[in-house]
Every structure is written in structure tokens, then in C-alpha cells.
Amino acid sequence: MKKGTAVLSIVLLSTALLAACGRKEDAAAKPAAAPAPAVAIVVGLDDNFPPMGFRDEQNTLVGFDIDLAREAARRLGAEVRFKPIDWNAKEAELNGKRVDVLWNGLTITEARKEKILFTTPYLENRQIIVVPEASSLRTKADLAGKVVGVQEGSSAIEAIERDAATAKSLKELKKFGDNVTALMDVRAGRLDALVVDEVVGRYYTARKPGEYRVLDENFGTEDYGVGTRKDDVELMARLQKALDEMKNDGSAAAISTKWFGKDIIKK
Image 1 (cartoon, rainbow, N blue to C red):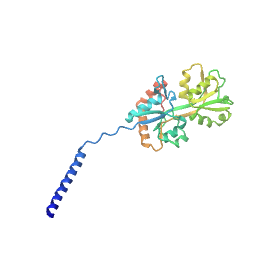
Image 2: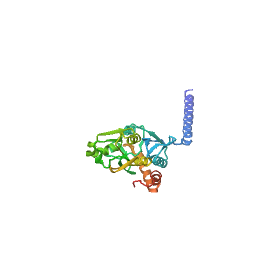
Image 3: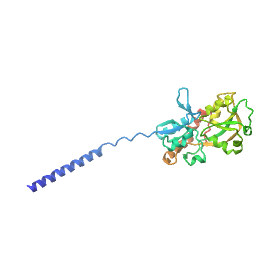
Image 4: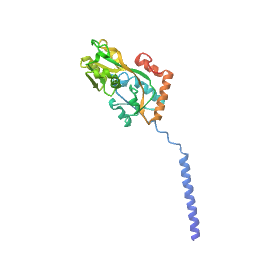
């Protein structure tokens, strides 16, 4: 009896093992699950920064950088989502992983390079000085004793500070949440001048003929780039490749012409 029981146990064990192997083979034979869809790239921006990124009459986000980002995402096979943020806290939003990319007229500076990984420049910009049309101001020296506005968190602040003599001569450097409000204060006479990105300043002043004037002097040139977290080297490499392709095949030039009337892309 003991011998028969042992034989029966071996037979049952062998059957169980064969069944288990069969289940493994069946599982292996099933087709692999479809890959998960690409994770969306979340772009942080100031949504009141025309013509780079702003809301039209239908409250839809539009702009030069919006179009560039959408085309780049298409080439990456990724979904792109736009998230308006406090531009003064952009580095915190990026490094806190609430956004993946900063793409909205982001000036490349040495200070920012310590916290942000940048693409090569795609646009050159100037920090221009906008005054009322009837203003007597003609040069930077004329800003002495005047109230000058800037957007809080913008590179205009650093541009003015680099010109120590002019910065020291100002009565006040007044900071605003956005350039639209600051321009309204220029028009109303509450500001003597506004230092602002040329792409923004000229966009607005062209739409209000006879109200504003741009001085011949400025606070220097600067480059715009796209920013990611320092450790997002793979995403940066893919974005850089897409931007390079867009420059080479004329796609970036076409977007530039749509918004500025000419190709101002920095090659």
C-alpha cells in the first residue's frame, strides 16, 4: 500500500507540474499589452505675454511659443498641455515638478543656468524702453528721477541692474504682475517708462498707434531658450532635436512669419 500510494503521489505531482507549465506557456503565447500612451508634456507659461503666449477673444491660448511647442510635441509623438503659472515662481514650479518645461519667452541667463537646463537659443530679444508718445524722454539718461516699470520676475530687472548708473538714478523701479497692466499705467501717466521684451512691447505699441513710443536706446540683447529641469537630459535632447529640425525644414520660420511678419528665428 505504501508503495502504491507513493507512485500515485508522483503521478499527481507530475500532472500538476505539467498543468503549471501549460499555464505559463499559455500566458507567454498571449500578445503583449499595448504600450501606455505617451505622458503629456506640461508647459508652464505666463498666459498674459503676447505674442508669445496669451488668450484670444475666445479665451483660447494662442501665440508664437504656443505654436512652436505644439509642433515640437507633435514631432515627439507626445501630448502637450499648457499650464499658466506665476512667472515669478517659474523655477519653483519647474523643479517642484508641477510643470515639465518652461516655454514662454524665457531668457537664458547665467543665474538661471544654475537651476534650469536650456536648449540652444531660438530667438534674440532686446529689452526696450516704452514711453508715452508725448513724453520728453529720449535717452536712458533721461530716466533719472523717473518711475520705471518692469514685470516681476522678468529679465528686464537684471538688464536694468547691469546698467548700474541708470539703475541708481531711477526714482523707483516699480514691479508689476504683467506687462499689460504696466503699459496701461504708462498710458495713464502713472509710469514714466516701461522696460519690456521687444517682442511684447512692439506687439502692443503697434496696436495702439499714437499712444506709445520706443526709445532708440535699450538695455541690451538676450536670447530665448526652452527650459527643463537639470536632470531631464533625455527630454532636453528630444526637444533640442525637434527644434533643430524645425529650424532646418522651415517650420519655425513659417511660425515666426505668422506672428512677426518675418523670419526672426535665431539659427
